[in-house]
Image 1: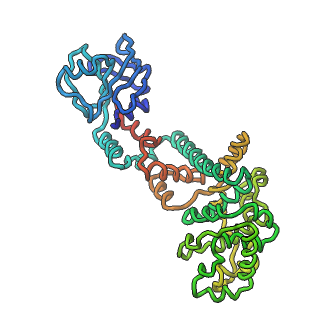
Image 2: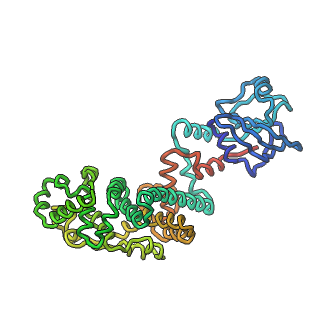
Image 3: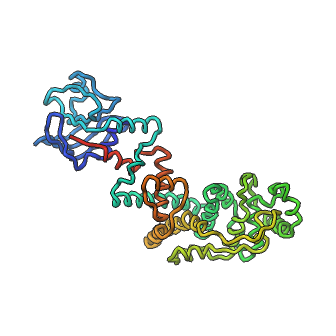
Amino acid sequence: MSGIIFYIWQKKLLKSRKLYTTNGKELEIIDYGTLENGSNTVNNAKVRIGDRMYNGNIILHDRENRLEKNHSTVNDLHSNAILHVTTNNIHTATVEEGTANWLQIKCAKDLEEEYEAMERHGHRLPCTDEVSKLDNIVLHSLLSRLLVERIEEKARKIGSTLNACGMIWDDTLFRTIARSFGFGIQGNVFELWANRLDMQALGKHRDNIMQVEAIMFGQAGLLNPESIPHYYREAALKSSYFNGLLNEYMFLSKKFGLEPMDFRSWGTSNATPHLRIARLAAIYHNQKVSMSNISSCDTTMGLRKLLETSLNGYWQNHTCFGGTETCGNPPMKERHCDIVIINAIVPTLFIYGKRHSDTSLCNKAEDFLYLMKSEENSIIKRWREQGISVKCAADSQALLQLSKKYCSTCNCKNCHFAYHYIKRRLATE
């Protein structure tokens, strides 16, 4: 069943309120009972009306199941109900005193209409304007809950990666970091690429950067000449570096049975993945990023240093194969390091601690987010405009969870912010 009356009952929003039946008797809800699936009947409820205790069924009435103006509806259909509950916006039957007990909840008409629109048409409740009015303690409690929810959601996905990696944590960490190098826009294709990497083959050649790069670029499909724009192709094919990679990959692909991904998966945008793959090759080669190093790291600065890499050789002055030479490619920016820490390292550390029953690691993972700057994007900007103070990455991650999992999907029924919005707008006699 839908309707705000069902939400009010299921969420127990009548707690700590003075309640009276329509005939003026004091009412106390001892046990809210169990709402039958797809029904408007609450089973096994317990209430006190006046000085008498009642055990039995309660009937909830919304716009769809309201009673007509005749006594037989109440007496014949719901004669055993200990209480009927409705809102003040629904006209109920005039019942003789003693025939049935009624609780009428004061509810603004527009709130009821907002809820119905949300249920039926996929609209969201207009509660964002009131979020900033929440008490600071309540607000931070809700944000903290959303933060944990977001970390755990990411951790579950990492758990699937861990299974695919044969329960090898360092391989799982690398694949998770590789996905984060998509920086949101290309996250899925970087994940597709990372899943194509044979971590055993990479591990056997980890001390040779040329062979690591050959496997990584080869599996990305970027050693296929057709992947190179025609205006760069001739220069690339004449490059000793490109040909060296191609020869290495041809040998290693036969040795390990490697199959490259379709280079067209990367799209045709100018956001080429070459430099990011080169950085990932350097990160993998230098062996600094491991679960052991991350677990023992106590500062965000320390985590950034683990990710620090210098591009050598060809990638010092190129951004793609055969491309025009540049003046030099600087190290990865701090904000990009932070994105990797937030989206890959923190949730991996969290699930690592959880799997090893080490709460200190779980707490450390959360603490890192409170020490880092908030992300800056259009979603966070909108929340700031609503008056929300976004001080750190923990806040921004919580608000991203709120926006993506509740607001944008109109999942108001399960949103704690919507709960407080409805609760504030309710009043009872």
